Structure formats: C-alpha cells, structure tokens
Length: 536
Image (cartoon, rainbow, N blue to C red):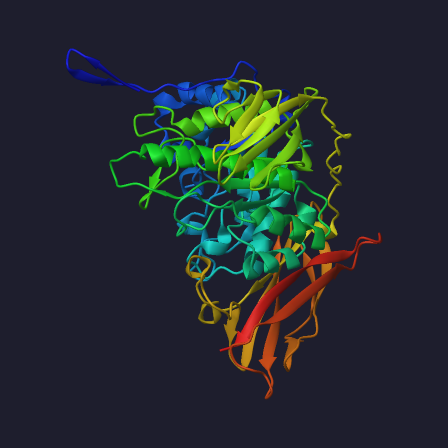
C-alpha cells in the first residue's frame, strides 16, 4: 500500500495471516516450498524467513547443497554450513527435503557427466548426507531436461546406488525420493524400466504451465499423467510434485506488476488444489525467496523480501484446506464454474471453486482467495478462487504408506552399462531433442557391464544379455560369472553387433540381467539394466 507523508511517498507491504493454523502433525501437512537457500537467501535472513514460511502454513522445505562444495576432494566432506541451515529450518518447525546435486569435476568423465563415473562415490556421498538425518533426500533434479549426454539407464544406476547409500546409513534413514522429472517422456520411461521404484519411498515429478501461454496460466496435466504412469508400473508409493509454479515475465530490477501478482496468487491456489485433488500427497511451490531467472519471476516475496499477494493466498490455502484429503470434483455448480472438494481434517468439507466468468453460488460460510470471510447467502465466484465451507467432512481411513522392506543382497547389486565416449548418446537439449535417444553404436561395439556390490559380503554374480530386436545381437567377451568383493566393482565385457537388416537411427532396448550364484533364497535375481542403442 502507498501513503503520502509530507509529500514523500511511503510504500510498504503486508501479509494477511489466518486465525486458524495449518494442520499438525506435519505428517498430515501436504504443503511445501522450494528454498535453495545457498543461492537465494543470505544467511542473516534465514531465521526470519523460516519463521515467515512457517507462519504461511508450509511444513516442508525443498533445499539442496552443492556436492562439489561439500566434497571438494574424494572423502573430504564439509557439510557444516548446510547442517547449520538445516538446524535453523528444523528449529522453526520445518521438515527438510534435500536434493542431490551434480557430481564434482574430480568424480566425472566426459562420458559420465553429470554423474560420477564410479557409482561408489555416489553411494558414499548419499550415505554421508543421510547421516545428517534430513527428513527426505531427493536423488536429483530434472535430469531429463539438462544438456548432457547422460542417459536414462545411467541415471537409473545412479539412483540405485544413492538409494542404497541412504537406506544403509541408519535403521531409520530419510525417505528416498525419486528424481524430480520435468516431464513424462522417453528419459523417465527408461529410468523406470530399470526397476528403480523398488528402491524408493516416494515418486516425484514437476508440473509447470506452458511458458508461452498468455493471460491466466493453465494448470498442466502432469499430475494425472504421473499417477497414470505410476499405476502402469504398479508403484505403491506416494507421489510428490516437488516443483510447481508460474512463468511470469519481469524485467531485471523490476517486480511483478499488480496484475501479475494477482495472476500468481490465483494460479498458486489452482495449482495446489488440482494437484492435491489428483492424489498428490505433497506439493512444493517454486519458489519462496525472491527469484528472477532468465526474465521470469517465481518468488512469493519481492526483491526487498516483502510478501507478495501469493504469500497471503498460500496462507489462506493451508489454513482452510488443512490436511486436504481429496474427495473429488465439486458437484452442483453453475455452468462455467469448476471446483474440488476436500475434507480438511477438522470436521469440515471445503470446496474450492473458480470460474472464467463471474457466477453466483449459494453458501453459508465462504472465504475469498486471501482468506477473508465473505457475507453468507450467495457469493460471486470468478477467476479468484473462493472457499465454501460446510460442517461434516467425509474423510475415509487414511491409507498408511507401504512398510519399508529390507533390500535383499541381490538388490544391493547394481548393473551399469558403460560405453566408450565416442558412443555417447545425443544431448538432451533441455528435453526437446528429437529421437533417437540411445547410445550411438557402430556395426560392432565393445562395451562393459559394471557390476557393483554395495552389500556387506562378497558375491558371485552371473551376468547375461537379453535378446534384442531389429537384427541386433550381444555376446559375452569372456567369463560372465564374476566374484565381486563387498563394496567392489567388476566389469564384464560384451560385444554388441548390428546385423545387415538393422535400421539406422532407430532406438532398440538392450537389457542385461544377473543373478546371485551363492545365494540360496528365492530373491536371487538382480534388478536389470536397460538401455537404448541405435546404429549411427
């Protein structure tokens, strides 16, 4: 707001906080925000900022630290700065989801970028982070849309190694959260084909509107797509949207206009409502601190750390929806209105409604997008969402997350396909690269299947290649049965051949499987390594 005092403009900002707090315990709170404090938040501001986030009703923070900074040389760890930040967040009642960053330069090769060439570095680093006991660890951020040559099979092997490091760190380790994929597509499909879900506690993805869309952003269908994909893979883990947000253009050094601020607040509410209604167990806004990135502004605070209207809209959302148990689409709405119903866990049914054009809706108790109570009777519903509240929630018994099972000795064996650098896959071009996506092979290519043993005992492992299509074949170059020491790695050589009928630039899958030869239980089969290859 602006006031005139002695002809000098006085400008300040304020936030509207609801009287009813967000739900406790935090296990029932589905609301989170992205922080990235190292890049976006001066250390001196962290305590006050953490308090503001908690006042807003968020219970979770998604943050991260730089692996190169934490481990500048092999085995030389320095997590003191990040540990202090985590303690500050926890002191303000916030749970922490940490994200693993790309590997240090000393751990990578040109062929492995952005992953370590030796997955034992990833295992040890993840185990070290887990020892600090964050509530959850996410295994990477948007690996499908970077510009590197890394492939889905290589990333799947990295996921397995880091997940094992986390789960082996303690009796009650942090939750293992799969990478936050930017979009569904070939990269995520290949990661999932490598049977990574068995190593994880949470499935994760991101959802953003079309950045070229003008006017009110449309909530994408990412939640529905990912839930359908999880069902196809029979994944019995909760789904988290670890990033959602709106692309609002702003010139450097300028804040959002008033119109953009309203658009951001409206989209925040609709994004959370539609995501939670689709079944997301938890959702994180990107981002909380001031953030101007390549002409786009994302933060809930302006450049001076004053709260934007979206901050107050977030606070109203968390207060009114509470535990946000989804009950499905709202019924009996006027034409043109859309909405979803929730049980807020406090014995109330909350229906969130909006419309492209103003319509009138009858209700007893209603609140506007900022949490202000409206007069009863009928209310006007428009682009600004309205909360309709009635007594008598209909929560069914909450489904408990699946119990963690101890990973078997076979699941502690990780297979990773390794090809020469000259056979690297095409770059991903921010996820926009056309096919083919796999390793680029000649008529005859020698490669290695690295067999890692992250278990506590040495194991005998036999590796074999599956049948291939399109006139491809695979032969072992020697003994496919190897002894792998505890914490060790052994390579098994193979030759991949393209036949006369093999088509160029057409991806086919190459699968390697393995079994434990010295294990007498039924769980002898090692999760596979599945890659794409094509004849260049």
